[in-house]
Amino acid sequence: MNRSAPPRRGARLVAALLAVCALAVTGCGGGGDQGGPVTLDLWARSDQAGFMAEIVDAFNSAHDDVQVELTLLPATNFVQKLGVAVASDAGPDLASIDLVYVPFFASSGVLADITERSEALPDTDALSAPHLDQGTYQDRRYALPFTGEASLLFYNKDLFRRAGLDPAQPPRDWEEFTEAARRISDLGEDVHGYHFSGRCGGCNVFTLSPFIWAAGGNVVEGEAGEERPVVGEDPAVTRALELYRTLWHDGLTAPQAAADTGAQALALFGSGRIGMYPTGAFALDEIRGTYPDVDFGVTPIPGPEGGSSSFTGGDDIAITSGSDHQDAAWTFMEWSVRPDVQEMISGLGTVPVHTEVALGPYSERGPEYAALAEALVNGRTIRSVQENALFNASTSPWATMIARGVFGESPDSVDRAVAEAQDAMANILSRG
Image (cartoon, rainbow, N blue to C red; front, side, top):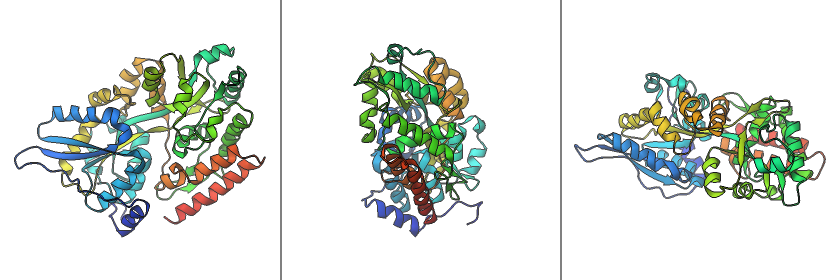
């Protein structure tokens, strides 16, 4: 493939997407009455319902010549629906895409090349670097940062006090982290030091990967499209799994962890019976609104001897390759990354992807916001064209590795789990 040219859609993409999702897709191309404004279709995931409509309303109020209509799709099949729709020339003009999936779509020809357009932006360097990296494939750009997320360790200050721990001094390394979990668990049967969603691959990409990165390790290496797994080679992966295994087998983790697919975690923390729980910015307003009696703080996810790391999450925004209104669609993208718009967006519960806004007005709201801003700016993501198959899917090698390594009874569970995951990931990537 010519590295300076955008990849083309082909039969392989259509076949791959149809194999995982047999859907009846209706046409969604944007339009407009002759002489009226151009109307664009924007697709986003249903779990963005809390803020996407307000973003679209703000854009529409500020523009007469371009209007955007929002369509929210179920998060569980957004990737398949978008891919099949665009490959069938029935996709939207714009898509807000979980940044972990952007390399896949860029490599598949689903997204329009915006390299020259983006080079003309006045302050691209001020946008989130992980988001920009995810939107770049073979030295061409296919997406811009849009909305942000970042993983942190949330902790219950009341339980810290009851356990004789200083809530102003949360854990800074794994020894302090394990000791805090142990002392909180000693408070009684219904209280546990830690919780994580053990049956959720995507949750643990967001929250376990930072433990590995903070230990100096990695899970995949190389550019997207040429990446290789290292889960079975990097000792930091084994160290992180051994940490989780100790928490589980010593009874320091809530028993629900082994079966939790992500649905129970926030409620368990909100019940006041969990000492520490890793999650993201979305939980701030949820905890305050639903569990106002929980006195909590946030702190970076620590490394074994200090240091910290975070998963930079959120969405990139992209124009689809089949859009007939790419100039108008660029109007929305260019607007969305302006500092004033990013400040408005951040007020809706997301971390701004404009770093000057994140480290400025957003951080000034309080220490939790400042910590999230630092986590986003200094965080990392996983770059892979097979992220779902490798990590997010419930049957992925990553999810299986955690289930077997952490919850397995055999003393060599971790060693076997990482070796099996290495082989399975390599096999997935070899198939393309």
